[in-house]
Length: 286
Length: 286
Image 1: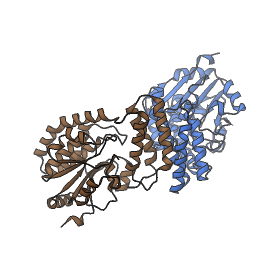
Image 2: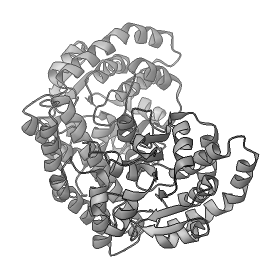
Image 3: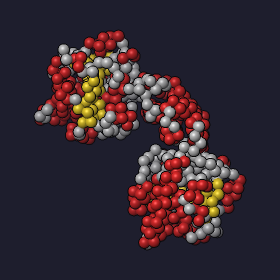
Image 4: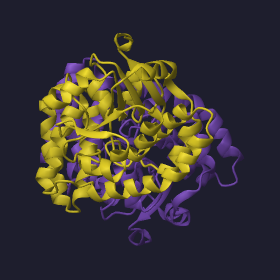
């Protein structure tokens, strides 16, 4: 997805939020906003938003001197999500359509996002997502491709959300490789967060090789790209990965909640809709 | 009121909204955002927000080549407000407390604001404001000072809202001087808009001598400042005027709706609360 004009003020808001989490010193945060404001002229609208996001969050760390402002918040979110795990497993057990329920839970976990400036309540948002109508639901296609797939690449998004990813991975009943960010950016899931979420019990964990808050192929490592090109299907979680991959020619199922009006417009859905959208699917039916 | 850190991303959003009203050319709007982004480093937090607002809206006109982007919108809002005038006069006629009802209507008119990025529905918002609880209500003080006042300076805010100001001025039963912006800025009320709203039938109209989207004394003309210093009471409409005058040592009654969280925090009220707040009142009781 390209960068829309609406993304530019949003990026300044993101810098402000991240700056406030890293420091309480108003002068430092003002200096950060001065710097990010001046960066706007160097942001081409042709770039995907997370490419710019990477530069901005790097600036947050540089100016505040805090490499990982969301570290503590991520730990708390993982803890809160783990506390919900047994109850959610029970919900799956009682469900008539375990896979679809697991997909709903995995999408619901996508509310844990500090890139978008919305408050969230994990437990309540999950309850809503269990009954909410989908804005796009390519479930039959998902089932069909899942059955045929030998290799599944699952692109993680946020820490905490990763616990709900574990629940979906358990229902896929296939070998899964789970992809994390190479180093901390916003509250995105890293190797350490994935292990803390129990992903190592259900999947192989690899890094995208990139510190951008999304999988953007041209920024990823060769090792990752080999897996990305050879996977039978790719499951992509969240807005950032959608922004980075919506124009990429691979069979991808996007699972996300459309948390801002720019993404909602791009997907032609309503804001806050939940989405299971497959792209470039034909080539995978071998 | 000082500029808060939250005001900075908001200013970029305002530039985007105004840019889109002035032109549909994405490149021009990107150029505008580049320029406003680069201006952030020159905004001291000690300035009031409308001081910066003036620079930004001037940049909108300079880069888009459109001197008054909101001209047509202002005409439409005045027309819509005038259509509601007879019904609102009837509401006043039936009211047990005509002055307080007129105050409510004048505050309700304050929803017509393109500086704040919120959608509004004039007719519906007025209905709500007729019954909404006040966040701050210095009504007794207002009545007391109004009775003693010989000269009332009424600082207008937005075009369209001016029609509702007329309704309040009619209930003040005193000679009133109505203050407009010197030249168009956002959708703020100018001389032409005030006349189109019928203000000339109930008050003398003068200019603040400034093109800022608020009365900021240091930017106003000497002629205006003479009236500002000698008025027995000043009635100030809207957020911009509050931002410009909240720290000024004159007897002022602020009538506004707290439409953003920064203003709400500064006033210690909830967002969307309606406000009648008097400051520096003792000196006026002569």
